[in-house]
Image (cartoon, rainbow over the protein chains, first blue to last red):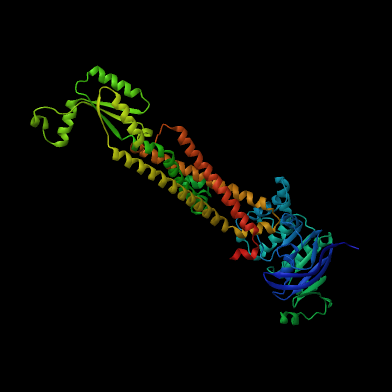
Length: 238
Length: 298
């Protein structure tokens, strides 16, 4: 049996003073592919933020890759984040420098020293998202979809054990979305755990996997079969 | 211009960008503060000189006895000049004294009286340390012991007044310095904090991708210290320009030969610039490093 890589037990998740998710119990196994679904504002992003310790956990306990989310030292936060590949919903690209420099910053911040190795890795991830020439461009010169792909490439830089993806297909056209999903599936096959918050039910249908749903302040397993799902009703509810 | 464009197609745009960027205005703000800091430092270094300049204007007139021989006068002058408290002496014979008084009065009193009632005298200037009421009265007694001296004359009230004024001045300069220094610190701190504030989302993003605090801080501090160094260079340059243009007007107050003091001044401008920018940056970046993303919006 595969080992647990994330475990939350009775965790309450607050955004400022508001309780977003109550008594969350979640176990994610190493190498698993997990969708987090739910309406807008239901707490999907907050849950992901808890994983990278941007939101503190008020009650309950949690562990991710051996890091205790309750009693995390300030100096451990960067170390945790380095081992995660995070695809932020709002990109979080450094707006004052080129894509190349953005990636260099990440690599240098995480201990890479050799310029040649750095450049090779940057070329690799840019090829992965099919944007080999984007290195010299400033983030604001790229379209939303292009920025999205750059952020995905950045998340891959350090060969993370977990990829946290917050609406990664939100800004992409269906064709590119599908390519991205294929890419994520391939990465997942190599043993990387992938947690993806999404609205994109079309993609869930095409690439079925375990789903959890944020609903009424709680996180539940979503056990309905993927195929005969009535997407229209879910969308209408949302 | 076209040659520049040919060789450096980006040069013009880059130059314009950097000139009008916050980078430039930050450097300029720091430079102006450091310039004022330099002026203050200059004032402090030269306060003693300024004080001495004022105090050494106090003159003592020794009225000499009528029958004093010229040899004795020269001897007296030599004696006086060899003492530690005398800065300079000037012998005024009775004819010259009469001429000067005639000029002042605008009337030929010698003609009117039929003789010159004035005696020869010795104008003495004492060193600043002795130009206070206590020392002056002691000096007066000393002067009177010389057989050639008949009378010692100086303006007691002026000496008193000058002393109390100089004391007040010193206090004012001290308070002013403390005040100015506080203002300088606040100004540089504000300038730096504003420039860091504009980068607060950037700092947050850097944290999100796993950079440690010190890794994020370091480039900010390097950049700020560079601002500080450029600012100090500009400040010293402006000070130098003022010195050279007004050298003759300022030479009584500022000793341009005193290269040690000037080196200290330049050194402290650089030190102040570097320490202040580094420290302010450290504190400002730390402030935003501690903030959660939601807090950045307030």
